Amino acid sequence: MLEFPKNFAWGAATSGPQSEGNFHKANQNVFDYWYEKSPKDFYDGVGPDTASNFYNDYKQDIKLMAKTGIRSLRTSIQWTRLMSDVDLGIVDEDGVKFYNNVIDCLLDNGITPYINLFHFDLPIELYKKYGGWESKHVTDLFADYAQKCFELFGSKVEHWFTFNEPKVILDGEYLYQFHYPLKVDGPAAVQVAYNINLASAKAIERFNKWRKENNADSKIGTILNLTPAYPATNDPEDVKAAEFATLWDDNMYLDPAVKGYFPKKLVKILSDANVLFDSTPEELKIIADNTIDVLGVNFYHPERVMRPSVSPDSLQDWMPDIYFDNYEMPGRVMNVDKGWEIYPKTLYDIAINIRDNYGNLPWFVSENGMGVSKEERYLDDKGVVQDDYRIKFIKDHLSELHRGIEAGSNCHGYFVWTGIDCWSWKNAYRNRYGLIRNDIHTQKKTIKKSGQWYAKLSENNGF
Ligand code: BGP
Image 1 (cartoon, rainbow, N blue to C red):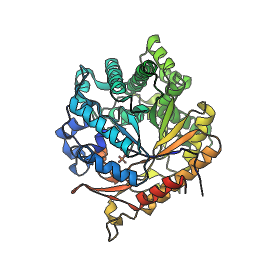
Image 2 (tube, protein in one colour):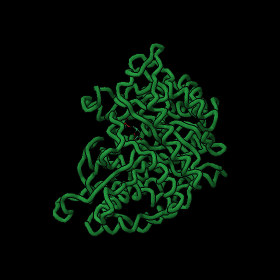
Image 3 (cartoon, rainbow, N blue to C red):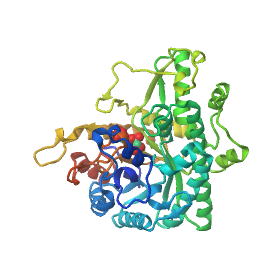
Image 4 (tube, rainbow, N blue to C red):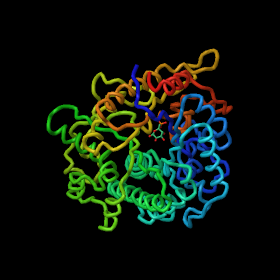
């Protein structure tokens, strides 16, 4: 039996835009807008309007999650639901009531809320007016919104997070065209990365002030998807490529969040390439002074890289992947549906990296899970998904995490992605990740085999 530390948080993660549905929502975010313009860009033409109907079903959904052993739920507040005017920062009473109801219902069911403030859902108005995260003004609007959240819900919420996966914002919106505005602009991506780090630090600054004034005991962090890169060989050129990929994908967010400054090596590379972000000493001081208390790590798959096939100097347009090529290791284990490698040992490597290079900061796995398409294939005659592959995936990752904890890494929780099958951006309902199945035609929710297993895992504090 692998036993986890006392008070280990067994949780699940989701987000507002992926679960709630757009009922009574005051404003549109980038996805609502994009879907309205071009539904064909979304898998099966399914948009965010209903998602998993959490807005209407939250009481029943929370009870079901409690039944599957979920003792902490990470979800997000939607800026576009909380505010009736995102530019002026005016709150919407229906939005405030909804989030109060959800938080109360979680607490009544013995589930601790972990509240994130931004999960890819930029209000479209801020993109149209100011250029979204390309604009520093938006970083101030974000800090105002964050402060409102602390004031409104801070008496009940002890775990706060500023952003989910900033790397995906860059990849999807500015580099590889899978999220609106579908740009390909390397230098803009560099500035966006900086601005998001700045926005996070500004929100933490407000939080620290609020916490002091209210004598609160709560904590704030950020959520990063870490994809450490392994070099294809020990050849120095491959090692150099892997080093850049890790600097770009992980350390560009991890270092400012935990240490308060950007990695010097990365700054030098960007500066040599003439694409360094615009910054001021005042902003860098805000970043230095407002680091996180706790880190959430989303982990799905590692990255394997090799030296680039073309020399970076011969290329005209700067893009981060001019420094490395992706490498498909022969024989690697794949989640075929998702096209992602399954390599649980990375979770151990992450645990050790945080222990040794990031001051053994308190952290937790804020997302990890197995996405499978056409999951109705695995329904038994009682209507229960027999998802043994998901149980195996979670067990394998927990084993590596446990090894990291035994080695002294300060990890205090594991949040599976996700509790209830939810809508996922462009992929809509293609990949199912839930411990609970959501029939998207009837909105009927049924606990899967993995959900029954998770309940025992949580009760026994191990497996
Ligand atoms: C993470 C996001 C989640 C979720 C998950 C699965 O990157 O934080 O929001 O979408 O990935 O994504 P997908 O359903 O596209 O496989």
